[in-house]
Image 1 (cartoon, rainbow, N blue to C red):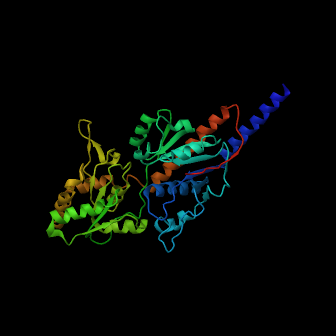
Image 2 (cartoon, rainbow, N blue to C red):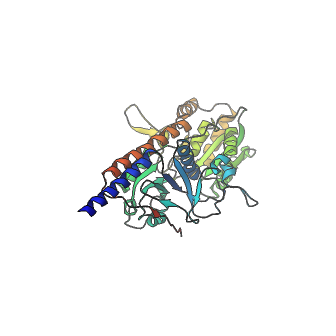
Image 3 (cartoon, one colour):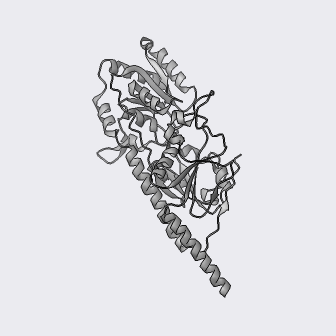
Length: 381
């Protein structure tokens, strides 16, 4: 009997210790992140933004990566993360799995992108809180074994970027709790202080697709051979924004987009967009008509096929040269502008992670046992 009482006292002390650490933000949030080897990637940029904001809010947030040679700074082979995202992001806390120096306990969090189900499997026995970070619905089932669910690996929460993605995730994983944190568009995405120039900024998910669209345009519109196409893939983020602000038109081809960061960046730059409607229509691309029915918003020129992009771009150039860009297009762009600010994202991050912690405090307070700290050893293959 005395032994049982002593055991309960120890468990009570452990519970109180974990709750105290959660109250004092004395715990780690470890965001597993792919090393892009210096290549600009919107999804990675968004993960870094979460880590940056959380550290500013007093949390201990880390970028968790596989190898010690994670490319933070450029070299003779090309850019590093600091070059395309910014030095302040490269200076955030980073931790390598290869170093084998990471320990997690019940007060800690591991946040893993949806595509890395193999890593989810490797951390399933660890006593920390496990959260999925989902930005692309197209990756949800990419590596997930047939018949498996996130909850099989102990992942009970998911952070995603839109309500639409949250609903889709709920249809696949009904017992997982969704948290929506929209992406913020930095203030340096702004209109140029000089007149727009005849340059088309283009972003396409598939390599080579931008070149095909340019060839299509020139063949169908030989009078406009003086127009320049500029693919923005791989540019440093600030330069990306400058080029987009100078351009008279942006072209977006990404059928599996989950949020649609690029067209929103273009709209913030007052640069009209011609784009392919994604399979999952973004919320900012929709509106309700007088009867309450959903329809596509006229804040860009949207099509469901790449086959008519050449003609659409040619038509746009004619009205642009005549200074006759449709007023309703410009008005709808203005209505969309400013909806996804960095301050709104920051507020959403603050509320979401505070809610995660409060929920876990309540759960831990009601549990009967707490497992002690366990060294985290992950081998990503």
